[in-house]
Length: 258
Image 1: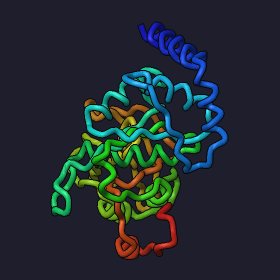
Image 2: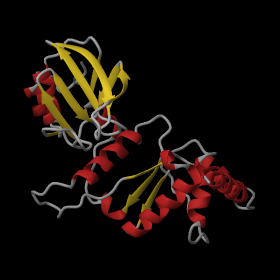
Image 3: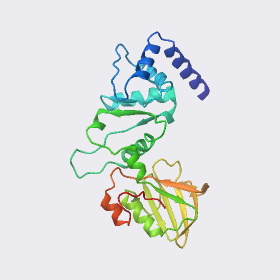
Image 4: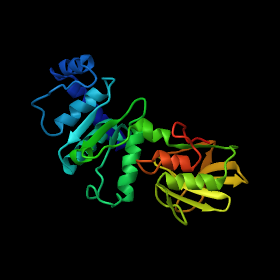
């Protein structure tokens, strides 16, 4: 079934590439300035996603879709994931809180936003789907989010209490048992953490102040999935102030890397 879907998507993309206007549009995008607008008229329904998918795999530049509402954003995401594959599309959902309030966004929304910002910093970024509501509030650049990551390496010298404090400061929720992205738990010399972008959470075992081992595990069975030599733990919130980094003994210009 998966092969049939992939074959159908490829046939649709090749059909779009044979359209008389496709090559003209591709050349205009290739020659345009990075931030220049290229107006396109006469495309309705899912044809827009079809042409965008065809262009995204042939024109070396980032693409983003600004949708007027959440329903249209979901439709664009579904169409593009069908045509390009789920790994080639990210969605930046709006914060599900009242503007200028003291409320916090729900966990799934925070995780999706952080994951999207991380993916948009890739050398070959995916197509971004942006509901219009996502634009009313400023967001940090992907590079800024990535610079706040903690990189753990087996054998590194690090006080587990310092790591725990750093992760909580970076937005992780301290829990008794890790079950969702953005959570961290410590039991003696074991620290479990589920960072944005991870398929499985990581269990870091300390021998005193040294990282003895890092391995992923299944949240349901708690059984080990496989060993890791390095784990990159992205922040679990969008904003990390410089004064928070200073409390951890890290200068604002430094990367928090161990």
